[in-house]
Image (cartoon, rainbow, N blue to C red):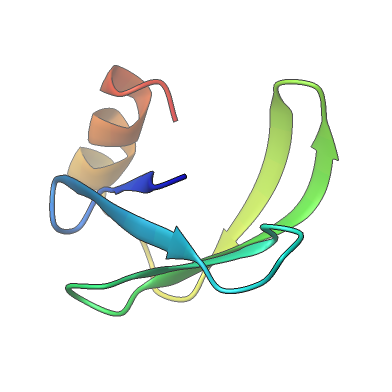
Length: 63
């Protein structure tokens, strides 16, 4: 299942492991790590800083 990449503005992030705790964008290479997951709540750590616009795009796409 692909996830949304706020840097590329595409659904281009793919899981790197079976448990789907690490995702990487196939276009720009940014990664996020899921450190905690409880239902819909998730704590993600990104490999690069996100801008205000990146965060707004994530919210628009429900990520």
